[in-house]
Image 1 (cartoon, rainbow, N blue to C red):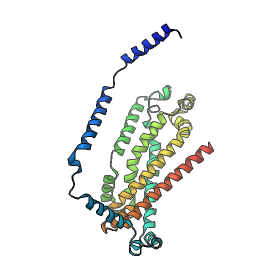
Image 2: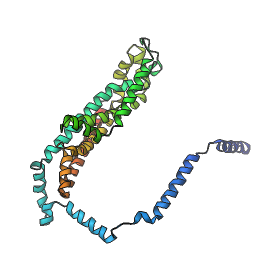
Image 3: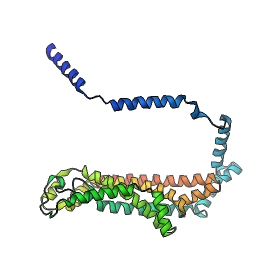
Image 4: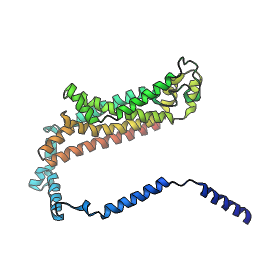
Length: 308
């Protein structure tokens, strides 16, 4: 490359850099974060406490000691842990609570996933439109109604996922009583909006060519969704389903504090009795359920990839 050509190239690069818009908002946000961080680091009021460092250390040590199982605290022998744990699992109804937690989470995830799959075609912008995937629908008597369906479906997703599960559960228990289905419905309503939003985005980002072929041959929107888009995007749908199922397990644990026998109910009772060792045991049981669900999700997705 000649010196003149190199000079021209550098001049063009310099010109493009001068024409590039400056992200002033990003610069100001970064400056604000730095200033706020510096203030938080130096502000003495944030570190004031009624307890001294030695008192906080003693409280922490005492709390950690209470997390140790009561028989182990008394004997100092961890071989006493197994009988204590088995007693909680069987006589303390922990196994029953685990089963109830799994049942609540699975039923809620299944309901929300099923209804989300039904509403997703109406919420996807590339299907619920007078020209699905850019192809004119010849059989549409009222083509503009698809715009209405799209807006109503998306509004339903936004509204339901904005309702807190705990408040929904409290209201439904007030109506239905302390029935497990009250919590199932509360979880299903909230997760319906989340799975619907995620699923509609998956449909909008799916490869359009197979679906266009189905529509061009008279298959319609529903045929394109069932025959082309859903099989292509099923693995992603499964990932989202198991993600929300894990969330449902955690939320079912919390909603159990409303009075339905689940891990949350046992955790609340253990906390009220200040049995922190039992409370930790029930919390770890919930974590094991989530880990098992993650492993199951991994196996299912691997199996689907092999089958395809």
